[in-house]
Length: 512
Ligand SMILES: Nc1ncnc2c1ncn2[C@@H]1O[C@H](COP(=O)(O)OP(=O)(O)O)[C@@H](O)[C@H]1O
Ligand SMILES: [Mg+2]
Image 1 (cartoon, rainbow, N blue to C red):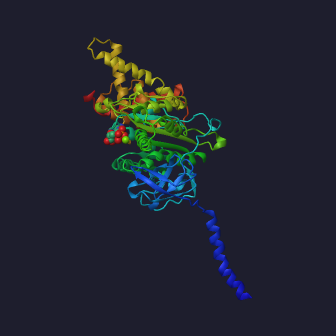
Image 2 (cartoon, protein in one colour):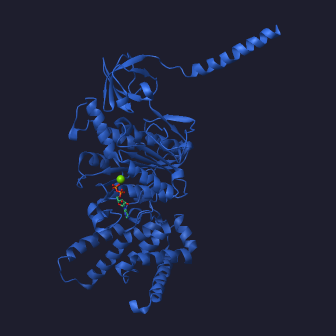
């Protein structure tokens, strides 16, 4: 009897266990076949009731999204190499939609658009998965944007400030410094708790490698997820990448984190979608883009927001990048994105050529949200920077005609040129709030008026150091977002003025 019980145990225990595992992973085992395949899209036949956007599985682990449901054929966007598929190949349905792993296990990793590792750090140990396409948070869950996202770039933080939860477009021709601004913004977050997702779409591998190296060198990789859908990858992967990046970011936002998502870039994303749509024989519209191209970008960027505390209280700031051609910002995709986002940072190739870097055209840039949440101390020193700079540029172009200039005009030009010098900033030279305020205040107050343009970099360094060394308490207050009182301001100007005259004296009176 005993022996029988033991035998029964050994027989049934593993069976029970196996049953338990099986029931959790039942798959709908309907089979269809590939009818034709090529360039990122496959036509399949055989399924009677496939759902729209359902994930299907081809041989060799290649996945696809059921996109065009027709009576006899289904157009599938292939999320992998179509060269490996042949007509007649079996197709399985999965009963689910595309999802990606989410959570802390992804930080510091380089993944593809489906969240599979592309680095050599092993499998990603994530418990949770979420669909790549998710509805944007409803209006009732959204809180006003009430905190700035410091980029560390003077021209942006002073003149085009960005708020947490905002969508700010970075727009410009190729090689104007768009990626550099996005990467510097990630680097500038330091250890302030902001988590970043850098999503590269359609970029060259060397460009992506460069970004990853910069993030690693700047110590930012550990709090960043890098998602890559390269220019050589299937257009389907390029298409889903930004949505997948948003999903990974939303998971952190729901836990109360502030997240920054860079989508680099949506011009290539739109092209990948255009390619897929043409292959799926959807009717082309303007510039051969399908008619829902506006909708695919608006539903993507609508997911950026600041949540009310009862819904997690986190924020998702989106920095979509768009590449223009020959500075044509009224082309289809740029205009769509300008109208979807809350402002744009416009980079001008002319400024780039002149060496005015970052090549931000302040007059053509705007932030419709962030200005309201700019740090008060910033507002005191940079409040009228935009206007003053615009007036200076106008004056300067007028002065070129060689007219006789009165004293006041010459003063304005002198000061404007110093301000322009101050707005120059090298790559990876992001500055904290107090340092930015010190140089902007010095420039707008005219403390640099006597400094030769060539010596400006040194003078800027002097005032930053002076503030840090002589008034750490004020530094700290400004960093925490406290306002700058009139007394503070006067004291700060005096400190900076003294530091500048000290170094001028040290440099020897011969130069004076
Ligand atoms: N502020 C800057 N100072 C110096 N060089 C810069 C600056 N911003 C960008 N660059 C350089 O300009 C080039 C183009 O920048 P990148 O960000 O790749 O342009 P884009 O993304 O617009 O094509 C890169 O070689 C980059 O190192
Ligand atoms: Mg770039």
